[in-house]
Length: 333
Ligand code: UT7
Image (tube, rainbow, N blue to C red):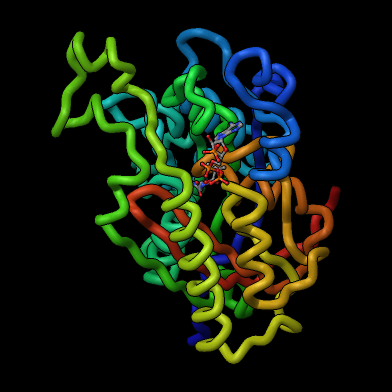
């Protein structure tokens, strides 16, 4: 019997309409376009402004975009995973609501959170379901409303993050296409350097912590930066070595869009040419769980069937890793 692998067979995406440019940020905090562009590569990000709309709004839109592009019946979807660090609510799954709203009424669904590596880890989970032959397809959505965690008076974080969502459909493949290998790691000592401290079970929100802005994300950028550069590059090298690949075998690097300098460092470590490095951080900033599927959506028309894509991510926790995937289709767009 032929081996079953998990292939991506469709992509969809959604970003909110409101564009928060570096120029607008200059009027909000002590920063400037030159600093943000040279330190991060970001020019603008999208923000979901409408009250009462959370991450599920973004996830539903991205999933609906995929469903209409692919022309599938949502009732045929077996599993819906929403990778997110900003679920709609503390209790009640964002994925369950998303699945119902898109009409995936025969699916089971759940959220998963590994901070900025949520989507990468989600790819691993989706692949395991399919390779086990328990399920034929998995809809994996990466969605985050990062603006809900950001203090727009804190220049260390507000210039980086944006809101958005991307979705991919994984299906069983018998021709060797899809996920080939993965290297995933985590290190909990890293949580001191990137966290939203209050509002969880260890430090519930109180009037006092709210008054201190305790609900917002805090980041010690330099430490996170150093760990991201080292570990993302290390994970990609490990994947190359154990699959006997050289840079000539890699068609694309799809790396988490946290900082252009981190992405460039990862590409340089494997000496990958610039034109093979997917990049859209200038348009969206760091959308946490949505960065990888937003890249696939933006580059979909350029990726060819059989192309080798190296995915890499690093995030709070710390969580990081790399995945090697063979692309399974030529886009009709
Ligand atoms: O996706 C999850 C993982 N997250 C990441 O991977 C993010 C990793 N970290 C980073 O991307 C970078 O550390 C940042 C973009 C957050 C910061 O860049 P940096 O080059 O590490 O800057 P820094 O924090 O060391 O600050 C350098 C200087 C400081 O001034 P002094 O002390 O040298 O006078 C800061 O006060 O830049 C100043 N600064 C700013 N200036 C203008 C910090 N933030 C800003 C700002 N605008 N927004």
